[in-house]
Length: 298
Image (tube, rainbow, N blue to C red; front, side, top):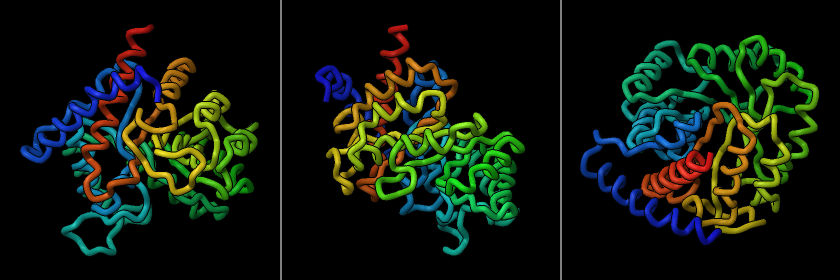
């Protein structure tokens, strides 16, 4: 961890404690969010997988409690604790439940920017169903790991619906574990096809995340931003940003250098599952502080 990151992190941890206490004491009072990041045109929210032990509606409430305005949903999350368990948030959900989801998002002040990681099969009818769902829900990006043979169809639908598709990287031995594979896959395809850069899964596979972000310049759409405790260890776990091995500050500095237009950052915190809000609040505070520093340096 960089020495200067420590001085950034200390007030962030204090802020996280305050946010956590505020959430516990008064759930209607949201956290501070990330105003400095918004000033840069950066959009940060939660990947709802962070709250996969809870329902979609509960996950939206948790995201809003942090003062965040955006989210990425994943297929298969229980929709609402007040409804039967087999009712899920997914692209096959009924019109009735879609309407309820839209109402919940509107009341919480959350925009659903992205959906995934979801399969985009070779069957055009089934792949189109995902795009139709995204269009109906106002979703602008689909995160997926499509087979290479399916990419021409995916690119066609992305252009038709004006919806971006961000190719996600899981750790090895998944198809897109190496960023070079992503670059090869998108070569010659529509600019709407790019990368959903998971900065935790790369180092789990022994790949430098900053190096990957640099290499993917021009194709970066969204980020599953993470920091983890060990490099090259598949079972390494998430830690508060700035305290691990991923060089989050360096990654954010590189993203600012690239001048990516309205990048999407999603916090996918896969640790302390039952009560990870304090950790996530610390990540938000760290992110905002780095964004403030980058803004001041312009």
